[in-house]
Image (cartoon, rainbow, N blue to C red; front, side, top):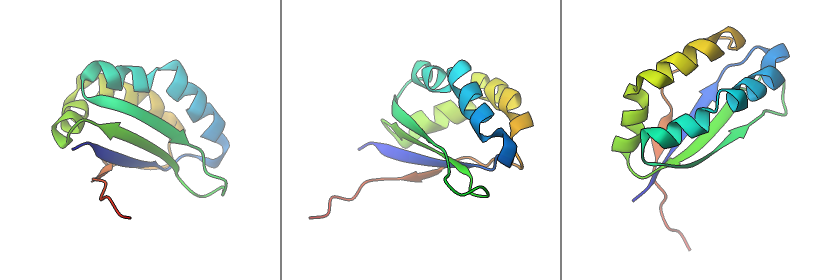
Length: 101
């Protein structure tokens, strides 16, 4: 069963667009894919100024997500994005889909 990670990025209000550009230029999703088990992701820009940016990603398993967390490339990318952020970023929360009719 796949899992979904929800990552909240506290971004400086004036840097939201710059973060989106940097996320794309650094090819964060491409690096996630190369790590293995990454099925796709979305970068969600907040409509409210103080809300965090949200990154939603789907993974083959929780182990795939953990492999991404442990990947040294992720640390390098995080360091490059850090100047745009307004606080500490914890690992994303993991969820599994529950079929509901």
